[in-house]
Amino acid sequence: MANRPASAGGASATAALTSRYIDHLRAERGLAGNTVEAYRRDLTRYRAYLDETGLADPREVAPDDLQAFVAWLRRARLGEGKTYAESSVARMVVAVRGFHRFLAREGLADEDVSADLATPRAPRSLPKALSVEDVELLLAAPTGGEPLTLRDRAMLEVLYGAGLRISELTGLDVDDVDRVDRLVRVRGKGDKERIVPYGELAATALDAWLAQARPGVAGRDPALYLNARGGRLTRQGAWKIIGGHADRVGLGERVSPHTLRHSFATHLLDGGADVRAVQELLGHASVTTTQIYTLVSRAALRKVYEQAHPRARR
Image 1 (cartoon, one colour):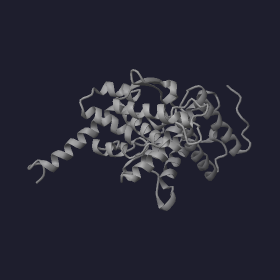
Image 2 (tube, rainbow, N blue to C red):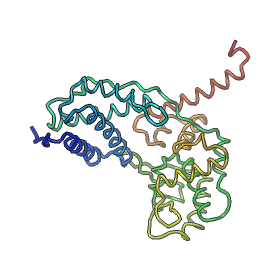
Image 3 (tube, one colour):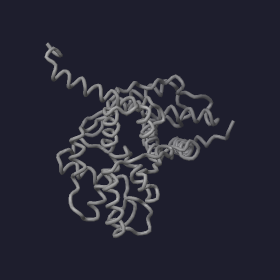
Image 4 (cartoon, rainbow, N blue to C red):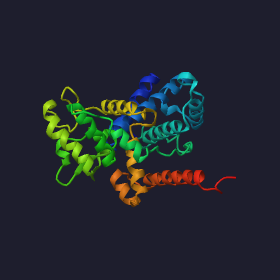
């Protein structure tokens, strides 16, 4: 059995063990940075529970303590009296189960006390897509010929035209773009690479940014999208820009960081695209993840039917 960290000082032992697990997720499992940070946040909440309940060391936790943790999450009150969504509870339970499984597998604990801990069933929420008309309204929001306006237009067009996540968009370098064949090389979750096409309108916007505007703000950074200082645009910066344009055209409350990606998938399926092809374009590991977009299309059809058919409702 591997040597265990000293159990003296429960908080320090818990911190050392969770840190070791986070390093494992990053280095050995190769999870994306955002995913690793989500695990870190969830395990920080678990550590708060252990501290509050006087459990000195996660290796002293019993199965009943884990059941109590789930109940503790459901009782927790956030700002303005809100509670955790069931999907958030389910995600935190997954993180804690992974942590205890890791401790047992590495010989840091005698057994996996989470083996019988069931993951709460989170309600299935459908991704929210914009209509084609609303997408066009959003894509037309950046007006004018200023360098950063041309950048914003190119960002929006490529985000929708290639169905990218914002983190994938901001991770692009100039060399990732094949402007002749209109292809972009994307590094997705888990650093998996895929090649995605983009359309003529995205090509026009991207060419304008690269030819007319980017040279004027570029430093040495190879990033495709730059901020006003010439450095790589961050995910948070990109989302702030997109949210600002959505607010200006009255779509602010309906646009989230993934809205254009959701709209890309939904509009392709509505147009007759094969779900397996959409899976490849989105970079989903499983077609089951992609199939949720077919439910969005069916929900839209049902809504039209119920509104229009004379015998849809009594």
